[in-house]
Amino acid sequence: DEAENIVAFESVMEVKIKGQNHALSAMGEVIRAAKAGIRNPHQPQGVFLFSGPSGVGKTATGLALAELIFGSEKSVVAINMSEFQESHTVSRLIGSPPGYVGFGEGGMLTEAVRRMPYAVVLLDEVEKAHIDIMNLFYQVFDKGVLTDGEGKEISFRNTIIILTSNLGTDVIQEMTGGEEPLPVEAVMGAVRPLLSQYFKPALLARTTVIPFFSLDRDAMKSIVEIKLQTLREMLMNNNRMEFSWNDKVVQQIADRCTEVETGARNIEYILNGNVLPRLSREILTQMSGGQLPAGVLLDVDEQGEFTMQFQNIKDVKDDN
Image (cartoon, rainbow, N blue to C red; front, side, top):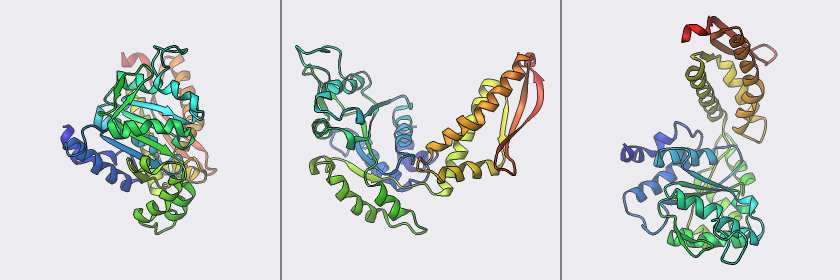
């Protein structure tokens, strides 16, 4: 039930988003107000500015939000704002005016929202966009509409808009990286002046600014578990193969991720680079002989390398 999920917004989102409970609480208040009809109906259902390090869940939060509110992670209009560093690129976002090349083709943003009006609009790396591009969004945030190149008003009133930025990363990491991180309010107070150097006060006043913190070891381990569980479901659904792992696997991956600045993004890199290639070769080798492992156990040896134990080879024809 949608209403029940929104009432329990934080607990539902925490299943996928780890280590950012303060962010989920701030979002929940805005989303509940919108759904209860006590926010301005002529504005988007929410406008958030996520600021902080890479790989800590900013984009993942947008995807999880789309699934919760609009039913699917595919209900996302994602725009990389670093592609709009020149003022003339505005036509790519909203479409070309009459008499110009590209007229009638629609803009990347306006056409996408016209076709999918119930969506999360994810604007990544907004600090890299030209100031003229950002000025466009005053109309969106304030009136809930954006006029495209043809002069048509595109409604954003059923969207939730998320802007992401790496601004303030150093300050956020310094204030939240210790054993006793400072309160969110203190972090906000330190980050806002940095944001004000890039964004006009009128724009910041129309957004809910939320700092995203670096992930601690426990949060990283929780995310590793989620990724491994996704792999487990994939193997079971596609190959009817059991997949299990030793606790040392979670610890090993989490340790590697905390050594680099890419955060949780490194989990995918480790799995795709170290685990999946060998797993794929083994599955295909067995299938070529008309067989398939019934299960695989992922472990870590004394040298810190991943190992796999394949169990109970079975005939593929037995599954048919």
